[in-house]
Structure formats: C-alpha cells, structure tokens
Image (cartoon, rainbow, N blue to C red; front, side, top):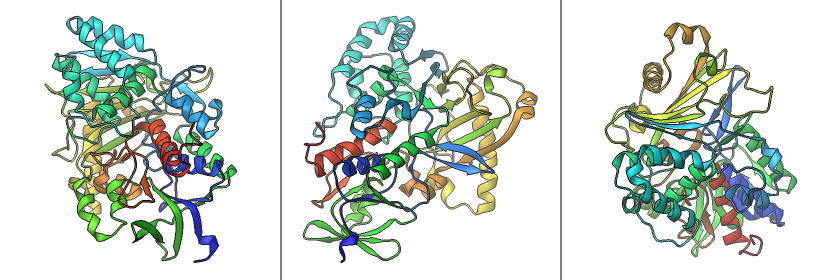
Length: 476
C-alpha cells in the first residue's frame, strides 16, 4: 500500500454530516478524503436539474434558525466550528407556519411566544402542563452521548393529557426527524422541539445548493480531498479494526480512522457478513413521497401566501407509521418556498408548492417502469388533492392555467440516490449516540448517530470528528 492511498481519516458519504466532519478534520491538519458513490453531494438534502430548472430535495427549511447575535445555539456553534460566516448561508426566515388538524390549527413562527399563546388559547386546560413541558425541554441535555433512551410519548404524557394537543405537537417533530413509528426517543423529541418551536425555520433564496456550495468550498480551502462516483464497497476487518477499504472500482485505501455517514445498517453491510443480521434488525421502515408543482406565479397570488409550511392531519388520531398503501394521504407537509421573508425585491422566479406524505417502499420498489410512471401520475394527483383540503379554495382552472411543470419522488427514488435501505428518510429507529461500532476505528455520524435536521447532521459530523479523532481538544 503506497503512502498516497493512506489517510488520517476517510469519510464515507458526502452528505451534510460527512462534509462537516471532513471540514473539521481538515482544519486541524488531518489528511482526509470523502468518498461518495453518486455524482452529487448533499445526500438526503441535495438538488437536481431538469431542463435547466433546479429542484431541491430534502430541505423544506433549515431548522434551528436564530437571529444574529443569539449565542449558545446549534446554529452559532456550527458556524463557529466550521469557520463559516453567517452571511455565507444567506438564511431568510419563515413568515409563519401552521399545524392544521381537522378541528384545530396552531400557528407558529420563529418567535416562540406565538406558539405559546396559541396553545394557551386553544387548550387553556393544559396551560400548566404545557409550561412544565416547555421548561423540561429547555433544560434537558439533548446532546448527551450516553443518555439512556426514554419514550417521548411517555414523558409528554406526564405533562399533557389532551390527545389532540399531544398529536399536534408530535406531528411536525416526527415528520421532520423521527425514524420510529408512533413514538420517538425523548432526546430526539427535545432536539426537534427546540429546532422547530423554540428556534425556527429559514431558507436561502437559492435553496439547499447554497449550503452545499459553502461546505464544499470550506472543505476545498482546508485541503480536503473528495472523490465522487467512487463509493466504498467493502470494509476489510482485521484485529478489531477497519484495516482496508475496498472501493467500487476495486482499488484499496487505508485510514487511521473511518467515519461513515451512510447509516448504521448500510455501514454494517459493508463489514463482515456476520453483521448483516444486526443491520437488518435495525433498518428503518419509514419513507416519503413528495410532489413538486411549479407555477408561473407565486401561490400568494391566489391566496396561498400566509403560511410557509403546513403540517396537516385529517384523521381522529395522528398516525405516524409505515404506510399500508403506496402513499398515506391522511397526513403530510405542505411547503411554500416562496413564503419566506426574502430581501426586498428578491423572490423565486416561479411559484413552488411541495407536498410530502408517508409512503411504502415495498409498494414502489418492484413496479415495472411503465406501471411505476403511471402510479406516480395517479398518486401525484391524489397527494395534491389531499393537501388542498387544508388550503384556501382555488378553482382547478386557475391552477391549471398557471402550472408550468411537475415532478415527484418516491421511496424508490430515495433508495436509488441515497442508498438508504427501504428508502428510509431518517435511517435506523435505534440511534448510536456515541457513534461507536464493533470496530475500534469505525464510527457513525449523521442521521443514525442521532442529531437531527440539517444543522443537527452537520453538528453530528463535527461532534464525531472532535470526539473520536481530534479527542476533544479541538472541540472546546
């Protein structure tokens, strides 16, 4: 093995967490290389082009947004540790969002006082329990790497008795971060509660590609190496360590440390066959389908201009579980990328509406292509109709006259472009908070380490780089 093929650290996957880990290590002089199987970085949060038009995938909004000057939050920690100037992300805050259920709606903004007032007005009998829950969330150490798992449903039930309020609070945090059906680990619930409700949403005008460009440039400036269209096919184990990485092209590299951002089961499948059963036992089952509609004019022109993101549910109880049908139309998320507070005179060139629902990977995975395309058309219309139940009425003729183009992704798309088994958006239901695996020099970062959201993913990469490679001295 020649010196050129040995690294201080190899990172598997060029998603947000992998890029952040790479930047952090390169800043401290480590020889680091990121290997990515696909031709585009970003992982679950990336973008693609069709006929010159760019579409975001993954990112509806960046969570954990706080205004300039607010210290001690995940966003400010991230910017400091990656040496990013806040203006480089060009974040524009949301206007307002909403949790819309059949018989109740709660508005929220990046000012927590709005949600606080909404809860107290609509659920006055829960005021005391609500206050105690918020206090617990504010004071809970959600980034502890050795915290014992606790059921979020059980903890919340100690404070709130009204099932409607409970379901309404869980709906956004689950849609934006839960790999577990019907419940969450309480630490993850806290992470998402803070990210969505206590902090908030923002988006660059040009979408997720702004974030990706900044990360790629920081990694390049720090001296990191990146190899695209070159994944890791196998991890050769020797004496309890990842001794050699065999790449897709058959070549081999070695590294003192290996950080995998591709997921726990996906990483275990690169290891010795004995670990396949462990991977299968902790493989996520929750995936999404999403429709994207592009219009000539911003949706505000026909009355869809008040809300940035709407989390909706039209069943007696909110059921966050694997869909039995190809798509579960009972609940979902509507995102209006036009409805952020962009600078005066700036806006997206076209109107965009994105609708996301839970979907079943198995119902999409093996369809013949002609059937698959027909099913996408059928479910596109069904998803759009489902979402419009929670929007001001607009006649079909107006929408049809303004419609420019559409696109849709399914769990099959997620699997193809991210490698996530079952198209699982948020990975494995059981997280590995300390990032350790059965191999002494192989660690996890990203979704399956357990820090959620885009900011959380990047902080996961930073934390694992600090904890396992830089040994804490660089993370102070």
